[in-house]
Structure formats: C-alpha cells, structure tokens
Length: 108
View 1: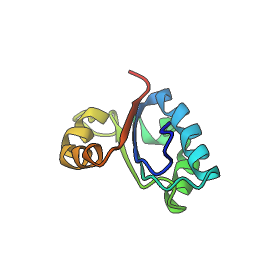
View 2: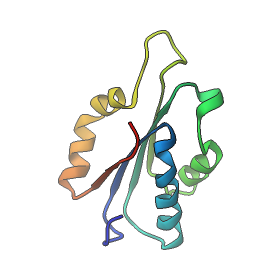
View 3: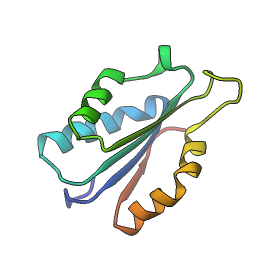
View 4: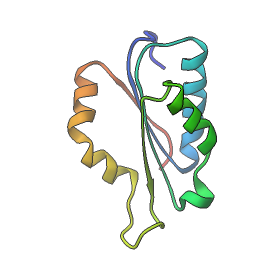
C-alpha cells in the first residue's frame, strides 16, 4: 500500500483476487487514510460469487471505498469482465493515475 496514506488506490481483483484488497480497505479504515479507494471486482455470478458483498457495501456506505465497479460474467448473455469496465472508465482511471494513484492487481 502507499506509504503516503493520502495517495489514491485503484484495486483490480477478479474472483478470489479481491481478498487482499479487503485487507487494504480494512487498513485504510483503521488508519483513517484520506486517499480515495476504487475497486474493480468481477466473478461469474453476483448471487453466488460476490465475495465480501456485505463488507464492501459497508466500506462504500462509510466512505472508505470511494467507488466500486463490478462485473459478473455469467449474469447476462454477453460476458462482461473487469477489463471491459476498465476500458469504459479509462479516462477516469488516467485522471487518478495522473494525480498519483497507485494501482494494484491480484488474480487472473
């Protein structure tokens, strides 16, 4: 994680790759880090594979998680993956990077 707690983070965690980012968010909350936190999470089905759904909702509600974009590839006819969401949000991702955001990827 960024040594400077005011730095923003973009986290990309498909499937179980989201697990370390749960810890990142817990740390950011515990230390009252001021940087923004954006999570891209994807899996097969929201109903059965939305790992840590409740905890992520609470992080979002409490402002620890600034933004969350989810992709569930089997919930519609055309498969949607995290990389599709990232392409759609490309301009915003580049703004975060230009402002010094750190990017972390865990998983496939």
